[in-house]
Structures are given as structure tokens and as C-alpha cells.
Amino acid sequence: MNLEDRLDHYPEAWKPEPGDKILGKVVSISTLESKFGGSYPLVEIVTGDDKEFAFHAFHTVAKSELARLKPKPGDTLGVKYLGRDDRVDYERYRILIERAEPSSETVDWDSVAAEAHEEFDGVPPAADDPPPPSDSDAPAPVEDAAW
Image 1 (cartoon, rainbow, N blue to C red):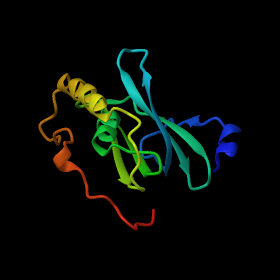
Image 2 (image 1 turned 120 degrees about the horizontal axis):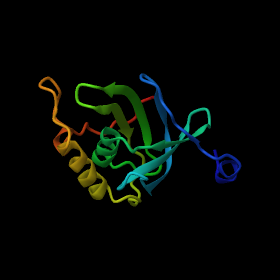
Image 3 (image 1 turned 180 degrees about the vertical axis):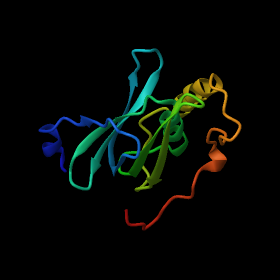
Image 4 (image 1 turned 90 degrees about the vertical axis):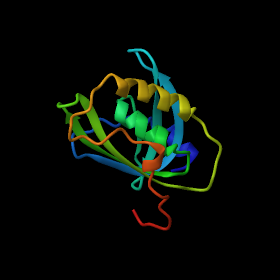
């Protein structure tokens, strides 16, 4: 989808149900102020069938995962919404990235990570839950993989 095509289509907000996935090329990233205080990343994604979606990553896990992965325009992003975990009161996501060529950062990911970390501090993990992701948990970049 080229820029002119994108001007004619406003990205649809991605509103997933548990198990839903979105996979596509990151075309833009910005930061929005939340009506509940703080900010969150907005990632616009164009899927393989040229549909454009806006991923409002205001949930703590989504925000934290994006901060860890630091996506950039041109990267391919895969997001799966796993649903709400009522034991620890948060929304669960699995987010993977396939890197494109290096480009300049558009979001202050360190600030997003700090805010997500503060949000995690208020939620005690269940005994069988893994700890929140850290930089050492980052997967190796996927190269030449077909999505």
C-alpha cells in the first residue's frame, strides 16, 4: 500500500478477541496520551492483504513487550492477544518481530518501558507466572523467515 492509498483509508483500530492475531509491516509509530494518565504506543500496521490497522498498545504487557522489542517502521510485527489473566489482573500478549533495515527510532522506548515497569510493580505475579520480560529474554532477530 503506497502513501496515496493510505491517505484514502483511515486505519481501523484493532480490537482483538482472545486468540486473534495481527501480522504486518509497521508503517508508523507514535505515542498517545491516555485518558487515564500516562501514555502508550500507537503502532500502525499494514497486513499482507493491504488492510491498515492501528494497534493501541495501552495494556501493560503490550506496552512492555513493544518497549523490549523496539519496533521501527519497516519491521514486520506479529501480535497475538491471549486474553485476560484474571489471576493477576492483566491482558496477555505474544509479540514477535522480524527486523527490516535499520532506521531511526520514532518513540522513546525507554520511557515506555519505565512506565510499563511501574504498572507491573502494582500487580503481584501469581506463583506459577513467569516474571515480566527483560532484555535478556529478547529473542534473536528472525531473518529470512516466511510469515
